[in-house]
Length: 425
Image 1: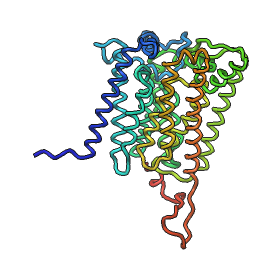
Image 2: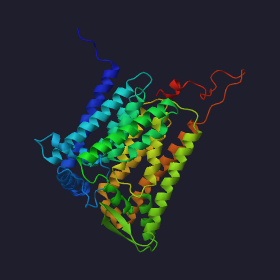
Image 3: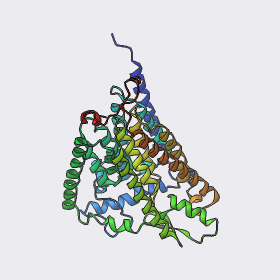
Image 4: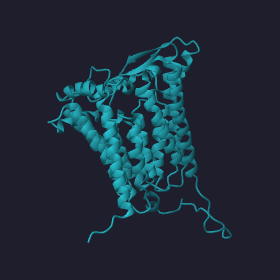
C-alpha cells in the first residue's frame, strides 16, 4: 500500500514542474532570439560567435591575449571549454545544455538547504521564479555558472568552512565577484578556515592554469581600458546630461556600448572611488559587527555584491543573475534581513529585460524612453543597495544584556557566546 503524498512532496513536485516549464519558455525565447523585441539575434550571438571564437583559441592552450574583448580571469577558460564535454552537440547547444544543468544544480542546492530544520524553501522558489524575468539572457551567458560557485560556497558554510572558501576561490577565478561572499564569515576559526582554504585553492588553481595556458593574466590590460557603460549609474547620469546639452556619444568598445566624450574619464574615476568607499563601508561593518546569525554571511554577501554593482562602471544585464542567486540564498533562512531587498531585485530584473534586449536601441540612443527605463532600473538597484546595507548594519548591532527585572524575551548579547554558536549558520 503506497503512502499518500505529503504537503512537502507536493511543494517539491510543484517546484520541479515550475522550473521545467519556465526553463522551457526561456529556451523557446532563445531559439526565437532573432525577433527584434528579443534582441534581433544579439543575445545568442555572444555564445555563437564570441565564446566560440575564444573556445578555438583556448583549445590551443592560450588565452586570447590580443583580443580586447577578453576581460575575464583565467578561470573563465575551463568554463568556456566545458561544451567539449558534449561532443555530439554544437558548441552553442552544448553551452546552453550545460547552463541549464548548472541552473538545475543551483535549484537542487537551494532546495536541500531549504529542507533543513529551521530553513525555508523560499530561496528555491525565488530562484525558480526570478531567473525567467531575465528572459533568455541567462542561457546565453556564463554567469549562471559563476553564480553556482557563490551559491554553493555560502550553502556549504554550515558543514565545511573549508569547502566554502574553496568554492568562493574557484568562483573568483572565473569572475572576481564571488570572493565577496567571504566578507561575512563569522570571526575566529570560521573566518580563518574559509579564507585559508580560499587562498590555498586560488593559488593551486592559478598555478595549474598557468601551466596549462599561456598568458593567463592578459585580461588585466583590457580591464584597465574599460570606460563607462551606458547601463551603469555613470552611464545613466551621462544619458541625462545628453538631454541638457552634453556633447558625448555612445560607441561600441571593449565588448560593450560605452560613452565617449568630455568628462567620461572623470565619471569613470568617480565610479572607482565610490567602489573604494563601498569596500570601506563593508570593512567598517565587519569591524563593528558583534551579532552574527546563520543568515549573516548570506546577507553580507548580497550587500557586498549590491554595493559593488551600483558603483561599477559596467552593469551588464547578467549582473542581475548574481543578485538573484544571492537573494535566493538569503531567503533559505528565516533569519535573513534581506526579504524587502529581494523583492526590489525582482522588480529590477523585470525592468532590466525591458532595457535589454527589448528597448536596447532606445537606451543606446539615449532617448527619453531609454533614459527613463534606466533611471527606473538603476533607481531600484540603488534603493536595494541602501536598504540592504542599512538592514545588515542594524542587525549587527550588539543586543543588550537584560536587567534582572526585564522579561527574558529581551535580546541578549552574543559577544560572549562560544564561537561554535556564532559560526553555525
